[in-house]
Amino acid sequence: MEVWPGHAYPLGATFDGTGTNFALFSEVAEKVELCLFDEDGQETRVDVTAVDSYVWHCYLPQVQPGQRYGYRVHGPWDPSQGLRCNPNKLLLDPYAKAVEGGMDWDESMFSYHFGDEDSYNDQDSAEHMMKGVVINPFFDWEGDRTPHTPYHKSVIYEAHVKGLTMQHPDVPEEQRGTYAGVAHPSVIEHLQKLGVTAIELMPVHQFVQDSTLLDQGLRNYWGYNTIAFFAPHNEYSSASHLGSQVQEFKAMVRALHQADIEVILDVVYNHTAEGNHMGPTLSMKGIDNNAYYRTVDDDHKFYMDYTGTGNSLNVRHPHSLQLIMDSLRYWVTEMHVDGFRFDLAATLAREFYDVDKLSTFFELVQQDPIVSQVKLIAEPWDIGPGGYQVGNFPPQWTEWNGKYRDTVRDFWRGEPATLGEFASRITGSADLYENSGRRPFASVNFVTPTTASRCATWCRTTRSTTTPTARAITTANPTTAPGTAVRRAPRTIPTSWPCAPASSVTS
Image 1 (cartoon, rainbow, N blue to C red):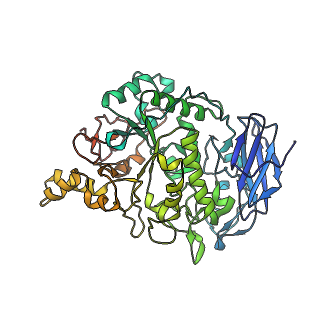
Image 2: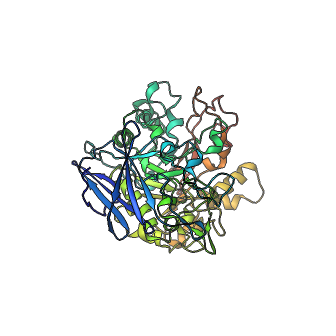
């Protein structure tokens, strides 16, 4: 196989119309193998020998879109120091723009043997592991332009790709639960009748199905378990050919923009699906664990966990920050999305221990000529100490106003002495935003979010039943208050759910 040196930038697999450049960052790697897989799953390994500034790279002139691939990283194994290289584990490219398949939680997916967390597992994981896919980046956008709806005129509808379309009678059966379903004229017409100006999609980055759910015949409905920050989730694609989810996602955005509806993504950059020291080795854990994850200072075997998921992304490291910023820019420039809602955004500001609104992440966003110009919505808290940061994000950001939520719910329940604060919240929460120079629309007012009803994560969506309808809330009603007010769209809870979300009462 012909192998050229290629280039260290951009990271990931990049098809240029002739061949494909591959680039992977790892500061600890001693050897890197690019693994190519054919239709029968046969593996061909290519030694990546060119290295610049810890980026391993090569160019394969014969590799075309649709090629499956992964990496094997050789290097030190010393979990007590946070070093977890294991070349027996096929690793997903953190910059993979499309993913084929999933993972089956076989013991080979872990770098230790079950029952002995200090052991070294040399079983090969390739047969059980998802693969990256080289994509064709070219797409006819037909002159697509973003609507650029100002905040104070925005009505944001939070929805789930599958739930929004799975039971819609006018959407063709083969398109239900997919990006194509969201782009169907009947769905768009429904959003327009509601006066929606933006749809906020719950996580669409490639995510992993949790083993505890699969063992019970359940699925991870919400998707807050990301493994690939550049790849649209493959199970939401109606087409079967490799990489088709990218083209289908772009077509969805184009159709929504043609209807003057913006697309905002709910993004989860605070952690990944690799979990803690007992989790599987899928990608960054085996590529450069200490660079990508926060570990405990006095025992690097263990992970700092500000998210309740087992790990936290290491926003102190330049390449981890680069991953986040490159991902954000990619979704704006290549996928044409209009903004982001950051899950547990306070975690991204933890450079050391405390949440710091002067953190490097916020500085990078502020200075970025692309990311700084789109809608930036923070979920302004995490579960770590001092994690509740409502009102403390930089001026460029808007925030889910948890104080508005709490006050309105207290007022609704008839709690005493709430009228004064209710008046403050309904008129824009000046006490939170005025001193930082922000306008009332910095407050994204809501009554209940998806996170208030995580019992629905355990809802049974078996192969034979339909999935829930959209967990949608609409945000922004500027005609009734300077801030952004919230109302929920009426919906029916399917009988296939053994438990209903806490917010399932029809408005």
